[in-house]
Length: 88
Image (cartoon, rainbow, N blue to C red):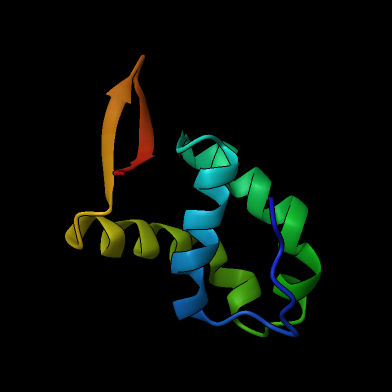
């Protein structure tokens, strides 16, 4: 994943962080896969971002919802798991 250089992360940054994580996962993934990619790449920034450290997984779901409303992301179930997929 191409990591952006940020001193801290804000809630609104979660939209492009989610997009970048899904692109790294070839356009789709489960919440667990997405969370792992984000944590592996941004744990230092998340830890230094105040309350975001405690809410970042909720904020990723908020970003998913925002992208869905914009028509940029779709979700579907596969074997009982929700798959998040970027729409080209």
